[in-house]
Amino acid sequence: MPVSPAARRPPTSTGSEGRPVRAGTVAVLGATGKTGSAVAAAALHAGLAVRGTTRHPGQADGPAGVEWHQADALTGDGLTHALTGAEAAYLIVPNVHPAEVEMVDLVAQAATEAGVDRVVYHSVADPHDARMAHHLRKARAETVLRGVRPEAVVLRPCAYQQNLLGAALAGRLEVPYRVSAPFSLVDLGDIAEVAVAALSGQLEPGSTHVLGGPEELTVEDLARTATRVLGRPVTASSITIEQWRSGPGARTQGCALTDLLAMFEAYDQTGFTVDPTPLTHLLGRPPTTWTQLLSKETS
Image (cartoon, rainbow, N blue to C red; front, side, top):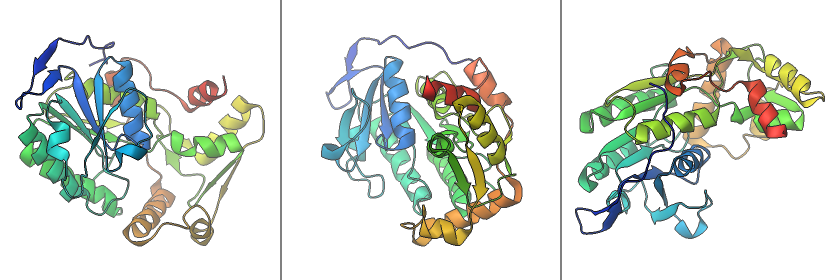
């Protein structure tokens, strides 16, 4: 169904612990991250009250207007308190985290204890792709979540356009896989718009939604388009894994390193593409293109 305009805030009520609760309050776990921050900002724009969870509230760097609560999805500390009084919770785990399944289970249990009506989980497109361990963890997390909260809504986005935006603006797209591999890169803003619809109860309980961009583009295509839109040269090139490890991946270690190397190999083999139709249907409009994102960033 199309995403509707901003929701009207209902009147204030009282929660199960006697805390004043304004209907329309949503909790965004990890609201300081790239995705969580985008979802929080979109929810605020839609007229919702937003609680953000973070392990370090004093250092929280997120959208203005977020009410910060200290909570740790890895240990469960503070989760129930942070979620109590929220109507909905958006659950996203840090990228390639080895304890994703356990964290999703903890949050699902805490949300139930706190009386949260709706849970929305940020998964990934093709979660059953056996080539990538972090995808398989998300598949297992979906199963665990459904066991606790069968009515939860699951979003399965493709890779973001924003992942390569900064490099494009800088004039050099360098990736550790072949630049001719196709991708259905999706705009993070579109994902956030759908997330708000899910948090607001506009999506079918228990539904799963694959979210991919409107075009299948290679990194070479991205560079050519950026050159045209920006009016200056943007190059595309493959770098070796060794170059990536000594450059952008220099601080990546352990499980995260293993997961990302497997992901790069999968990207090199097949790219990462999905059907754009579901996102078009949910938005009620064509999803944002790479050209549109670049134009917006430079306007």
